[in-house]
Length: 199
Image (tube, rainbow, N blue to C red):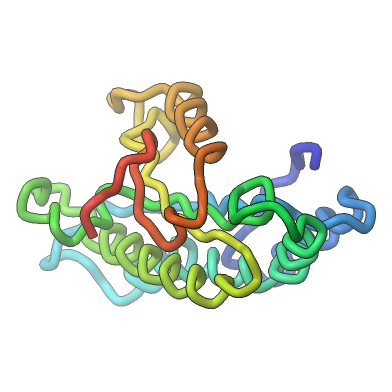
């Protein structure tokens, strides 16, 4: 499917419906092989400074958004899987990739927690990892793969210019990993090189 020039607000149901309609039009009756949920916002708050409003704002985009997008695109993903009945579980058949973060690793918190705690961001990405596992189990019988991938610290609007990875470097590496995903990766949390991340 050609890349859309429109940015969708993953926290807005009307925007999600519009994105789904555009995808259906571009696919022209075919299914969608790959859905990449790549949306994220972050605040640099600690336990002492975070508010309920901060938590809900970040969860709405980082956690709820991918759920609603996956719901909306489920018929197109299932259609793609049925179009390729002999294809093994992979991105060539049908897959959902949730762009997570190493900051969402519970095991790594003692190693990385700092003054810029990213409190609500870490929690939202840990929740996204759980969502990935649930989606993987839900879609398993449909032949649809679900994987969470941490792209690394990237030079984006959120990552900032001091991040060590350029966007094209992170994306290029992940794209190569997408081509290698199989049934054994279903429900896993990986880094951009395809290596397992600690939960």
